[in-house]
Image 1: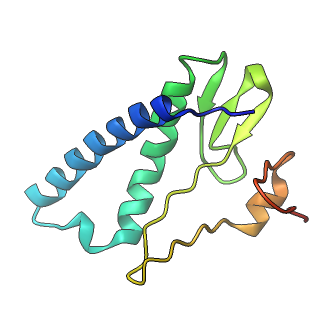
Image 2: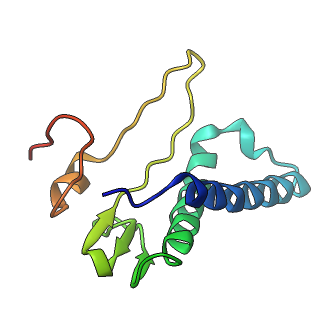
Length: 121
């Protein structure tokens, strides 16, 4: 089942971009550069990703919430009994993208949708 379509993603990403621009401006105001440390930027943007995608999903599904704390689903869609895990990453200088997750966190998940292959704990 497809939970997120192109339009939903574009709306969530537009909100993320606005948030990002606001945070960059705040850092600049305090003589700091958020873009200097991409790991830090990803941490700041991770919660925004969960919030804004959950916000858009809530227009289509009942009982959408987001938490993101360790051991909790990033986004929960109660009406579908589904958990969505959000991952935010930045392209490496080489162009590669690493999609990483904490192994213990993934093992705690009841169901883990996988596009290809199989995840086993």
